Image (cartoon, rainbow, N blue to C red; front, side, top):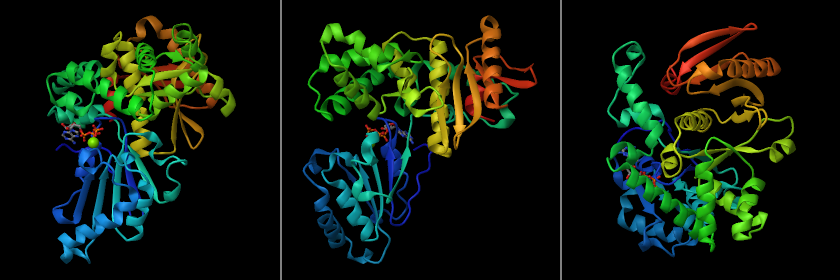
Length: 403
Ligand SMILES: Nc1ncnc2c1ncn2[C@@H]1O[C@H](COP(=O)(O)OP(=O)(O)OP(=O)(O)O)[C@@H](O)[C@H]1O
Ligand SMILES: [Mg+2]
């Protein structure tokens, strides 16, 4: 088993929740918690049909059965690892019981709603959540057996890294896709599981053709602007659906981590709600089922990396795009506790778009008094001085390895 960058921690009296998209490695990460002393870890996978029908109210019985088996452990620290907990009715009540009894608890789920207010009222303040995404480029290299450290920056190894970056952009970074050969078939299966299990079954959706059309539309729109109303307008004539239905389906897709809608940075929350969003996929491999485009893959990959920084390292970070939907301004604007800390532009090559990219980022730098400006390219590396600002031009592989 390969190590992951996300390190969930277990606290007494609190449940740790690992949530994230299908096949991102949640179960493996849960396994990684298991220590040498195996009898002290109770692993239950609620996707196993044998466990269907168990509810949170049955948990005291599970604990009793455990101590029947291991009475010698009554005084030891016991861990409950509960996989795909969203399948359990009243699971919050069960988890609360386990915590109150002094057990350590970690759960996984593939719905972002798992710990939302409506769902987890019983657990308020008693859970910490970690979001696990597909592999970062650093993890991807490790899964590919390539060890890369700072001292390799000037060596021959960068040729290998650059080649693997193209693979990373094209096929994405689900762990199995990195490890196995039949990548397209695996991705095809993932896409279909996400649609049937996480969208259609979980939300009791009947209009399968509509879901498929929305998915197609989102795949075709990755790294582009969209809005709920434009999607609705597009589907209205064919399906005669209401805006509410389209909105619900989009929420379901967002909830399952299939897609992220990046908001525009605006002064007010209300303005931001109304502005178009940018569409990013949870994995660029999924774009194989639409029209692939390297520039858009690059932008999508940078987005996911910024999301990892937020979810793995610093929850105070927030990511937006900046500027209008007509003229291109700045691809990513990062804030920390509400202050703009970083502006990032992504472009395959600077040669054609040089003035446009540089002007936009410097203008935004002035507006927000932000000096941390980066232009990410596929190959180019440079430093540009303009109006007292210093812009770093960084190749994508270096940006992702973050030295
Ligand atoms: N840390 C790892 N080391 C090696 N292989 C891994 C690792 N994490 C995931 N994998 C590979 O990816 C596959 C999917 O991982 P895992 O089952 O943990 O994902 P999951 O998020 O629990 O998926 P699901 O949503 O289907 O339950 C594993 O079967 C394994 O082949
Ligand atoms: Mg799993």
